[in-house]
Image (cartoon, rainbow, N blue to C red; front, side):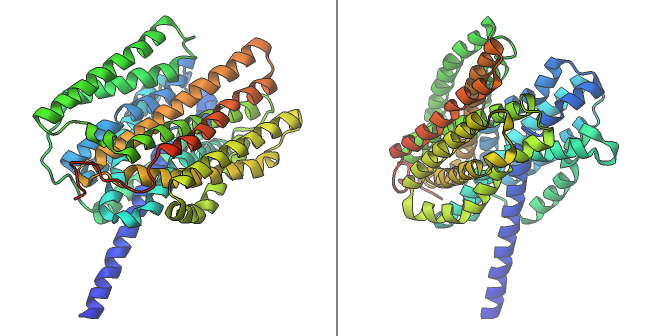
Length: 480
């Protein structure tokens, strides 16, 4: 009997490991697709005769749809089951990827990208929710941290893979290969998810909140769309009108959610989560660190390609040390999370700020002779700092969230990350392109604009001081 018990335990452990791998690959694929088309845009424009607006929406449409549906997707998982919504999102994402690869016009490609982003938005929250179910609280730290790190690494991975696929022109598929690569991966992930990812849902009866979906999605849209599209639109009056309307819609959403909580007990976003110090302070750190990630990737890549003549693949490879640094640091980050808690978040933020200041100094001093090798060590340290920050951040933010709210909490954390990313792109991009258009000096533009992510990383580290040192359960909700 003991041998049978041990065999069953080993089988359960293997199944859980496979399920975790499925969730991690899906996370990486979803977030990789937010940037994989960036390096393919010139080729897409030439092949399809796409307008600049269509090319812009090939990128922006994915990000906006993704961010808008994250909170909704999280709650759908709580209501209908996390695995079910994960598989639905994965199937839709895979079919939309095929549709993008087969697109014959710019409009069709934009439509496919919006669908891709929407299905990714309902799929992503199920990843963290499933981890909450599969792992005991004391086991979650490394898994949550690695998944959190993949959120940033996916953007870098998309640039590298996209650059390689476009440059290699596999089987003469040109830019279409950046979408086709998702299809076989998606098929395998769907089969593996049905076999290994466990069924889970909230044990408390919940009901769909359609008005909450509308108001919540509109609130996120009114923030993300202007920040994504504002520079291209010349910051027209209607962009500012949307930004001014956003707080009003968010206030209406908050009031409606309080009413739903009081009357039905099943709001789209459980507001009591924000009474938890770890969850609430985690959103602040998430936004600030994401501002840094979004800002520095945009301007460094644009600078090395436009001013220094790097190819798409060379530009992507320039950021490879960032990804490698984070992966190599993972074991140390796990130890730091257990030993240091919130102090590891502070350490990670300060390391990122200092390392990116080193990147800035290297670019300033090297000038036109800059190579990717010059940036290897400081970018690797930036990646190490990111892993050191994000692993304890994800753990502290979600560790005291009740199981029945896991989907909503995961969707909220990812939404704040996406808002931070687009805010970083908007702030650093406005400074970079403003100087570039004014003086034409790309070197001055990049060394000035990089102070935005440097400051954001430092503030993210300091914001960790608002986090608790240990988990504090949310009053009125106990983990299931």
